[in-house]
Picture 1 (cartoon, rainbow, N blue to C red):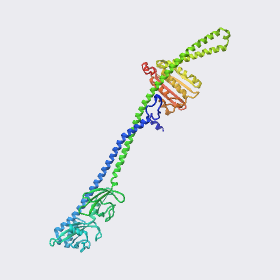
Picture 2 (spheres, rainbow, N blue to C red):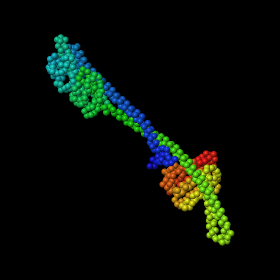
Picture 3 (tube, helix red, strand yellow):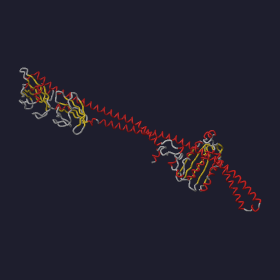
Picture 4 (cartoon, rainbow, N blue to C red):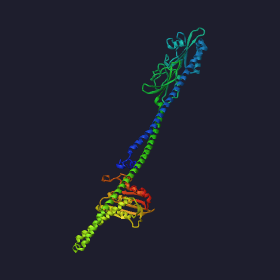
Amino acid sequence: MSIIRKFKPQFWDTDSGVGPAKRLFNYRRIWRFAIGVLAVVALVPLLVMAFIDYNVTRHSLESENLLLTARTTSNTRRTVASFLEERSKALQFLAEHQGIASLRDCDNLAKVLESLKSSFGGFVDIGIINEAGRQIAYLGPYDLLGRDYSGQDGFEIAMSKGSYISDVFLGFRDEPHLVLARRVKDAKTGAAYILRATLDTEQFTTILTSLDLAGSGDAFIVNREGIIQTPSKKHGEMLTKVDIVIPGFSEKTNVQQISGKDGTNYTVGYAYVLDTPFIVLVAKETKELMLPLQTIRMELLWILCTSIFIILLVIVLVATYMVNKIYEADQTRARTLHQIEHTNRMASIGRLAAGVAHEINNPLAIINEKAGLVKDLFMFKQEYAADDRLMSNIDSIINSVTRCGKITKRLLSFARHIEVEVDDIRFQDLATEVVGFLQKEAEYRSISIQMDIPDSLPQFTSDRGKLQQIFLNLVNNAFQAMSDGGHLSISARESAGGKLMFAVGDDGCGIPEADIKRIFDPFFSTKKKKGGTGLGLSITYGLVQELGGTMAVESEIGVGTTFTIVMPLNITKKADNHENPAG
């Protein structure tokens, strides 16, 4: 709680005030408005820039992933196409240079198969099929000599188009394999034959499994019907239907965002291998590809939050500083207005007191003269002169008139001092004069007044009226703080540097520590319910400053309060006359 109070701005607890000192501004509203406007002006561009930067980064990462996937897919397609084309060309070369008759020789066919295995690898067997679709020569691990292929699509396609590359299938041998076939014409008879070779899928699969794919990337081949031709990590078993939609035909490599059956979003690169039934697929989970974006997003969020915090802190400090300056300027204006108002009021009271005193003095003089005459007349007659009661009443009248004369003289003196003037002052006389105004209240409330002012205190030059007002305000304030039977102390000393230091102390209720720094603010009062205006100490503080002095306060709850004022012993008349607002 104390920390909050320590950092609370000065203007936070001010009220609006009334009259000439009414506040010109609602400081809290200005403070909130300034913070709101500055925050919008500073934070909106920052948020817009952060949003743009995030989107640019996201699009860049997406583009990079698409490009990398497309490049991997395209390279894989070229590798697969080259693998099949090499082996298909090898069969064509054998058919053109050795001829059917030579290839039908089993020993030669064995040499050819061995040469293909050693040169290219992947060949399992090789055979020759005649126009009727029957295999008339065969060398391999299976008993396929004489097998009829006339009803198979591969035979028809090879005979009509000259070449054929099959899907991966199980066939008679019940093992995954694929077939390469080339149509060959016998140079002697002109009959057409099919040179048919079988490849295992090991090297075919190795092409895809050797790819270096980040994360859970999966590269595999499907045929045009979506049947998986090589092992896949997560999209189905070999020779089963793939679980993602096969994109439409395209001669170029493309990349698409495709959702799997389980709702997972994949970035899929696909490429149709021309003149084959194969489609190369490279599938990566989009979420894994975008993982770097999550790191970037967190870094951006931290930077953004830190920036917003710093900006808001600076905005609050700047707004508080600016509103405090406005508040101080408004305080100075209010204080000046009240000093003028108070000075004018005191001048009016002074003139009124002077008039009243003057009007009373004349009747008092007559009463005094007539009472003296009556006393003299009574003194000539022994009858009246011996009447002690009668003479006592006459003396009482004369003494009362004398006392009234002193009061009117004091009022005239005070009225003269309201008019600003700089003259020589004896502090003891000034203190006695001011205390005299409150002597009756002190007697009525049994308040003892102790004055400690040495006779050796030198006379000094100052504004008597202002000094009187300062002293009267402090004594009045002490009377308000004390209960009946309290003690008021007044002391004065000459301090170092040619200055006068005097103190007014009481044993009243004291001032809370939290209120001490605000007691000189206009309209601040802890006694508003008792009629306090909150102006006395504010005006006193201003008058002390006008006289070139300083004012300090020490207070303790339940012990009392002491105001100490230090001021120069001499001020120039030029400065004083300039400061006279009532002149």
